[in-house]
Image (tube, rainbow, N blue to C red):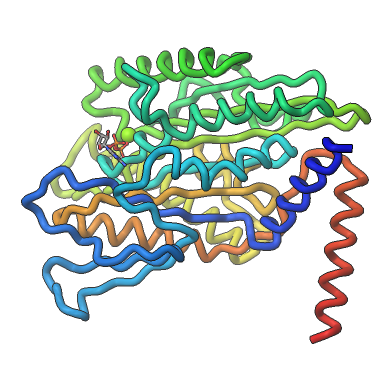
Length: 368
Ligand code: ADP
Ligand code: MG
């Protein structure tokens, strides 16, 4: 009765999403902290359009127009941002792999979007926490799925290294780090404690190596598994990625370790771009193996998964160059059209619905 209807609606919703393509790009503009500087944001549209203005050419020819799935202006709250992310999190519970990235230069608000402030009150917590909280809510509400398990793993990738080797394992969905601690979480409090522990580790290393957190990628992976009443298994994962700062480093100014870091960051971010381009061009070879980051995420980055990228920009005029390059990268990503996402679950219901959609599409095509 009721559960079945809810389930079907959810499945249908996912399919409608599939038809729209599986890569979505949102832009988020953080508030300006320096009232005395010029703001380069010229216009933010409800339809995902964004116009920025070159501070050196403040006439019409200095305008640059971009189009995304959505743009969040500086007044957008964490809850508003999460509201648009929620359907994607729901589809994890339906068996889809999902990957959410935060991209942008250092200081543009990536960590604010993904983690939010972890100390003090619970106010302004970011997507990592809100997503897990929502997954718990959903799992408590699903009486059709038994034996639920939610496990969380945190990995930091710095200079293409982490202490642990990435290995794929046939029995698991997606790549996992066999030696990384995979912790079962049972409540939002467990999650918050784990996130604080993760942040502490990042802070410890940032005193050892100056501002390391802006030069490493932080990947939180949530594994969900369960079995429904008819014996179908559900297994999916959600990657929540706070990327290293995308700023270009002037190579004439840095040497030694700083130069090495900059090269590694450029390498992994450009590999991410290459993978996305190869997917867009439907190449037979997708260069996942060129970086640790893309290798770790490969099962959640292809045509079989759903991807959301947040492109973060700072509004101040001295960030204009980086803002343009962030928006260009994001624009390239948003034009990627991928095939239908794959459900990690065998369900005849889904197959039937798919067939129904196909025949409706055919009928529609014949009419035109
Ligand atoms: P990044 O991780 O990209 O280097 P942060 O998330 O650390 O950037 O943001 C830099 C600073 O700006 C932090 O002090 C953060 O709290 C603040 N900040 C970022 N985005 C917002 C926002 N949308 N609203 C309020 N403060 C923000
Ligand atoms: Mg950060």
